[in-house]
Image 1 (cartoon, rainbow, N blue to C red):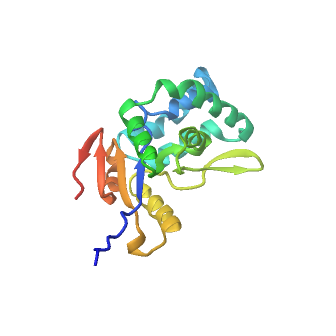
Image 2: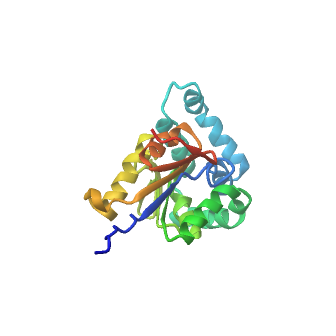
Image 3: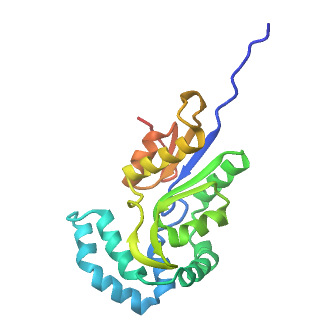
Length: 215
């Protein structure tokens, strides 16, 4: 009687965005597109105590980002921000792609794997980025919208560190359920310590373009 083999589990590839698929952080590039250089510089000066506190590890990444985004986005219309986001994705991002990371994403997609962006970057442009790349989901730092305008407040926790694991687990549970025999094989890609918790969750992981030993 022929041996019955179980089908290979599905594969999910989780990609950090800034520094993994791109050459550097994209938030300031987006904010410069949205605000213009003079206003962006003014916003950075206003937020400098909190930004300096983050650099000195006196306040959290979450708090520093919340202050910056509130100063930059509060009371701006969704329509205005989306226009800038579309221009950012079309005109600015093509110069920032990291070839190796983008190649890995395309290879996973061609193999029929599900691909997820999981990033601390923010919703005003990340969902458009995800659509342009054809990924299956975008898990990012969501911004609050009320009556068609951004309040400047975060609608979710900053998607960084352990929060990446929490968001990814919730997405996997929603799409694959809790049964252990139906869980996909997870591949993960990152470039900073904030990605380490996500890399530890994966069966295969890459850090800064090199295989990362999963503990």
